[in-house]
Length: 202
Image (cartoon, rainbow, N blue to C red):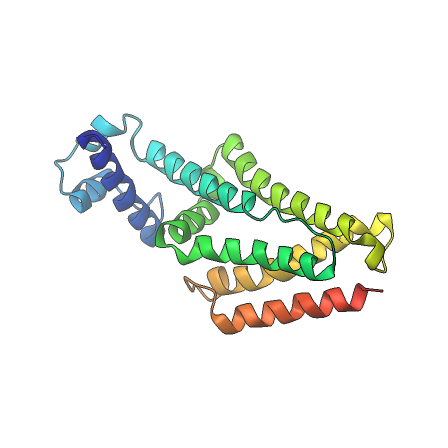
């Protein structure tokens, strides 16, 4: 890696930490320079558009990471056990993102700074959620004959499964401000998913 690339990564990491702690607007370029140990104004050499360019890169990197995780959740589903495993695989992949400090900070920054994100960035975030939903819809359709649901229920069922996962993730990360999903929360979510699948199975 080039020296300039290493320096850019240092700036990104320092800015990400400050944005997560103080917020984008409250963080100055001078604070970022000091955190990295470079002279005032040096940041603009690496990021000509200043801290907004840095924010854009942090959001984009976070979305790319989440997209890669979603791609790993595609499993072959033949029966209800496979279906449950697919749901839990998606849940665990999402939790894994947030167990990483960079992933957690990128997520928190994205949530807190939604008002200043571009339409394109908002679309990136929506696309990740859409991909998760699409993967689940495929799973539901694969085992539909083993479930007490009609074709028109597939969409609603998928949304309910996502709601179960989202509740524990948002409650822990946003409401309780924790950085990881505790084992007992994961266990509770697994139990909820299992019960839900059992209730709708034939």
